Image (cartoon, rainbow, N blue to C red; front, side, top):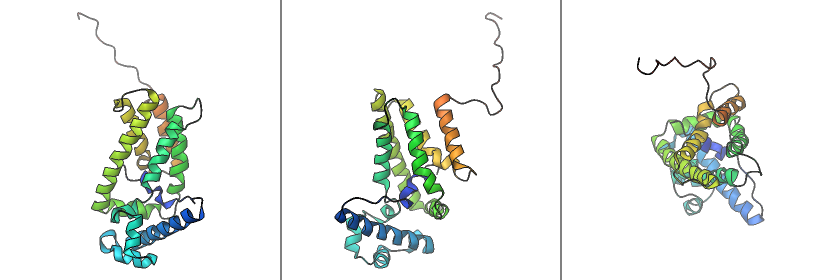
Length: 216
C-alpha cells in the first residue's frame, strides 16, 4: 500500500516542556520503544500486550492509559503528525503558497525518518502485517480528508473540493513514491515541482498531432 510511509515518523520524537509532561512522554516512549523492539524481533502477531508492558516495566493498565490498542503502539505519533500537517497549511508564512508550505513540512518531517537506521525494518513490519496495513489505510483516509479540508478552507473552496482532495492525497503519497530512491530529497523536490508547475514528458514536450480541418 502506498500510503504507509509518512506515518512512520513515530521514530522521530520531540521533547515536551514541563516536568509532568516529560515524565508522561518518557513512559509513553518507553512503551512504544519496547513494543517496536518486540515486534521487530518476534513479529507483530506473536507479541502480547502483557509482554510489551513487562518489557517496558509498566502495568497493562498503564499501557492502556497511553494507547488505545495494539495497533496504536505502532502508530503512536499519528495525532501529532496530523496536527503538524494542518499547521503547515494554516500557519504558513505570509505570502507562502500551500504547496511550498507542504514541501517545507515534508522535507523537515520525512527526510529524518528516511535516514533513521530502523526505517526499513519499520516499513517492512507494517507491509508484512495485515492488521497494521488495514489500520494504516483507515488512518491514511482520515489524514487525506483532514488535510484536504484544511487546504479547502484556506482557499475558500468547498470542504470536498476535488482539487484540494487530490493535492492532499498526492502530498501524502510522496514518501512512498520516493522510497528507495538514492537521493530522497531530490525526489521529494522533483515531485513538488510537478505539483507546483505541472507535469511534462520526461523526454520533453511533444507537439500535439494536427487535427483535421472541420468538414474534412
